[in-house]
Each structure stands twice: as C-alpha cells, then as structure tokens.
Image (cartoon, rainbow, N blue to C red; front, side, top):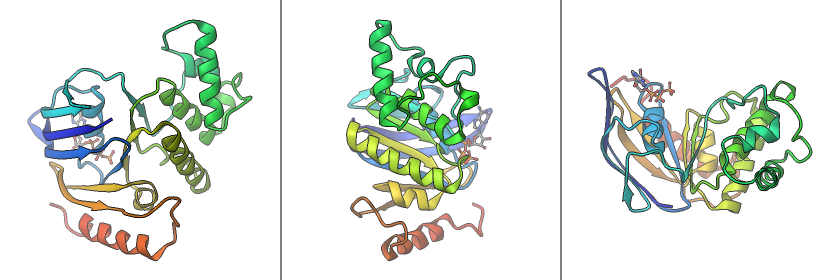
Length: 243
Ligand SMILES: Nc1ncnc2c1ncn2[C@@H]1O[C@H](COP(=O)(O)OP(=O)(O)OP(=O)(O)O)[C@@H](O)[C@H]1O
C-alpha cells in the first residue's frame, strides 16, 4: 500500500513540532524515520496512523486522503502494552471481529509466525521482554495491516533479542508484504532494515536528508558499505549543533 505525506505540520499549543514534511512511500518499502529526540518522529507516526488528526497538510493512503483512523494500519509501540489480565491468545484476539474459533485460529497462526507456538495460554507476567514484544507484533499483524507503523519497537530490549526481532520483522515483511514506517534512534537498526532513511532535524523537525540503502537482504551488519552510509547519516544528524 502506498503512502504520501504532503506538507504535514503539527503544532501543539503554539509550538510547531514538525514542519512541512513531504514523503512518498511505495508499497512494500521499509522507511526509517531517524532523528534526535524531540524532532517529531512519533508525532508523524501518530498522524499517519490517524490517532492524531490535528495536523496541517495531507496524508494519502493508497490514493485516498483521510484523517480517520485507518484500519489498514497496524501500530507497534516501544513497550508491548499487553493487557495483564488476558493471556497471550486473548491479547491477540482482543478487539477482533468474527466468530471466536476463527479469531483464535487466526491468532494461533500469527503467534506461530512470530515464534510463539505453544505459548498461547501464558499471561504477560510470565513473558520475557522479547516474548512480550513478539506478542505485540502478532497483535499488530493479526488484522493484516497493509501499513505497519513501528515506534522504536525494539529499543527496550537487550542487543541479542533486538537483533532476533529485527530478523523476525524482515521475515514477516517478506511474508505479508507490508509497507513499513519505522521510527528509531538506532542508526544500525535503520541500516539493517530500511530501504530508505529519512533524517529529521531541529525543532520544529524538518526533513534534512533522505538516504537510500540500496543493499540486498539479508545484510551484513558489519559491512563496509553500511559503515560508509552510517558516517553519512552521522554527519547529517549534525550532533554537535542544535538547529
Ligand atoms: N501531545 C503533545 N502535546 C504537546 N506537545 C507535544 C505532544 N506530543 C509531542 N509534543 C512535542 O512535539 C515535539 C516532538 O515530539 P515527538 O515525541 O514527536 O518527538 P520524537 O522525535 O518522537 O522524540 P523521541 O525520540 O524523544 O521520542 C516535542 O517537542 C514534544 O514535546
């Protein structure tokens, strides 16, 4: 599913958080939004999801401009946000429409695709951080979203779990062909996952640069080509200057 942002700006109480952001995303593309804290990455993601409609400009999803919540988008947050009184299966089926057995079968299938086969009856308190985030991924996927929005989805996890879940994300992307917008602070994560990285900078945040990562997957995290792109990204972030 395609996605386009045209001159999107968002102002909170007189202060502009992001200004005039333009972005065209092709179906099946993985786009990273990268930038220092407070430059408006989450604000943009909330606008794309329809959770926040108070922005100026236009957001078009598959050719249709709308400010409503899009049922074609799935959202994954930094923390899993599971309901503690529901087990894993119930957390994934929660809010789905349809017959109970159908919903459960669907949830079981998606839980298997994130490596949680047989864990359906566990409660959130019994899960590791990585398992809980896998449940959150299954919960987002079960609605078959054509656009997946991820807000620093792996930043609370240890380095090894993070790398496993990045690979998992690529597996589900291959399987479901979703268009993905990923907010991250982690340059290596953006280099490993994204087709294109949008660098935002400043307050209000504006698009400073777009970097295409034209490397086949699976990528070598330690490759020289990625290291070169990383130094370009670091230079664009201009961490020594605030603007
Ligand atoms: N609901 C809100 N009310 C008022 N100001 C807000 C609101 N949401 C965001 N902002 C402001 O908008 C700016 C951008 O915030 P946002 O959370 O989008 O940044 P971010 O780039 O995602 O930051 P971080 O990387 O730290 O999560 C900040 O100055 C923030 O204080």
